[in-house]
Amino acid sequence: MNSWQKRVLEKLLPERFPILKWVMTLMLVLILTSCGEKADSQEVSTGYSENSPKISQISKQFSEISPPSVIQELRTILEVYQPQVTIVTPQPDEVFQGNKVTASFQVKDLPIFKDPQLQLGPHLHVILDNQPYIPVYDLNQPLVLPDLSPGTHTLRVFASRPWHESFKNEGSYAQTTFHVFTKTDDNNPDINLPLLTYSRPQSSYGAEPILLDFYLTNAPLHLVGKENTDDKFSDWRIRSTINGESFIFDRWQAVYLKGFRPGKNWVKLEFLDNQGNPFKNAFNTTVRLIEYQPKGKDTLSRIVRGELTADEVRGIVDQNYRFTPTPTPSVEKTPQIQPKVEKQPIPETEIPKESQTQPEKPKLEVPTAVPSPTLPPTLPEIIQSPIPEPQPTVTPTPESTSLPEKVAPQSTKPRLGGFFKRRARKMLTTPQAPVAPSPSLPPTLPEIIQSPESEIITPTPESTPLPKTTAPDREKPELTKDAQLQLLR
Image (cartoon, rainbow, N blue to C red; front, side, top):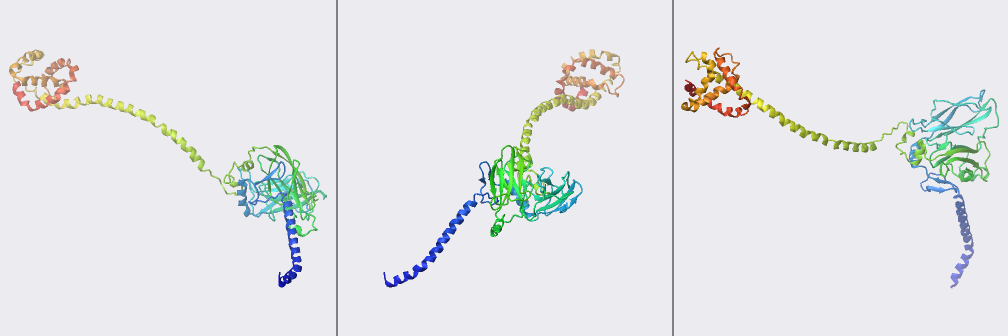
């Protein structure tokens, strides 16, 4: 080692000791602070930070869990409000000469109402002395406090959310002390000292988790209180005891707990000073008896269990909101339309029945309609042909009765006369059935026409083949009328 190196080391060694002392003190401070943080972590943290665990075991029986999701969503809607509560009556230190007192309140920056269907809404918690709170949903109706005992009484009021969690902003709490007949030392807290106001749990519950909530006045923040070591309540705590199990809170926040037994449960809240002892002031220690029955059907129980969505219960935070369910009923209506389509094949079976009846109707109408138009055109032609027969001789009138006998011998002559005589006789005999109504014939002709009608009555059953032969045969006699007249002459 060179001489100059030795000189440098000799100069640095005396200066190194204060540096080492400073490093050692720094290490000791870090170790002590880490131990303090471990000790503080054993206490319950009740914030709503997202980094906090969802479930935290705080005792053998009870655990702290995060608020229900619906409440977390609705809570953000009410964060815009900073309610300001004022007690109008009774006035501070007012003395009443009766045991019946009427209280009225005024609230700004928060709508106070109750949803008619859900039976929840923003309201006030009104606490007389240290009794269970009275909910107020209508500021227009004064609250009557009957049968008050003589002496001093204190009225505490603060704004609450629909699920009974208190607003904790400045001005959301009001307090007044009055007297009935005279003043006493009871129910008269010191307004300059920390005061604990018990809120929840209260009454009965139908689902877990159950809200534990309270209101603090004149309790400084922990960071501010630690600066003043002489302050007895600078490092305050809230001790909660449920069914004999105790745990401590170091933050002023609402807590949701799980682990209550069905039936009766008792809850105790205490305000502790720096040494962990109960701090003496009126109402700083409160005990309540509640009842827990699972599967409750009230709105709050259904919200806690997650049976209702935030949209369905939004009316408890927004007075003008109306929930309109749309998607579910449309799906239920579609299967009802399908069975109606299946019933349509029933009328299809009736259609062939109608088709069978329709062809039967024209069969009845065709035979009646065919002969009716063909007969009238032939009648005038046949009537004109027999007119010249009585002209050659006048004697045929007495022999008109024996015309059928003359027709028989004439039938033998056509053998020499030819085919046209036979056709002429057939044409004359067949149409004579409808000749009776003709009025133009002479008086002798009706006798001649009536005689062949009697003979033609017998062949009426054979009338069915006649329309077939008459249709083509009638066309031929129209062309040979002159020939027929010559043959008859």
